[in-house]
Image (cartoon, rainbow, N blue to C red; front, side):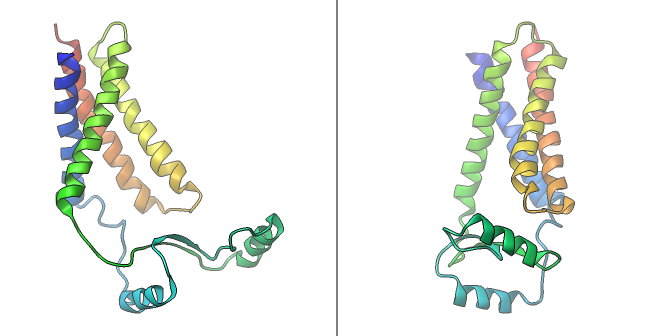
Length: 183
């Protein structure tokens, strides 16, 4: 139990710490969100048009549309612009709660990794490190890559998340590899 608790706590701190460095210090995510001088006009148009918060795919067919209507829209839109918009009615930043949630999520993820490591037979540095790194790669592939694959998300958005998952889980893996393989 001690191995899991300490392993998870230190691993969670490493994973969360890397996220903080990559977002706030190193600028790895700087190209993810582009600036447009038309932002005031766009926000005015969105707030005057959209009635509820949510994520919108533009253009799209109304709910209940037939398969044919969806196919017709796809054909009509070929080669034309499109967008995915996440719309919020009011800006409200609560960094404290976001940081707490971020750390707790990191802690739980590393705890789950420790549970898997605990089921392994011999726990060598390499086997534990590989398990942790696998968590990072699966996280990127399933959350970021496949989740954004359908929307044609550019590599400039995906690459920082790949770096975060490989480096963050790599750091946690180095720690866990040492922690679990020591005698």
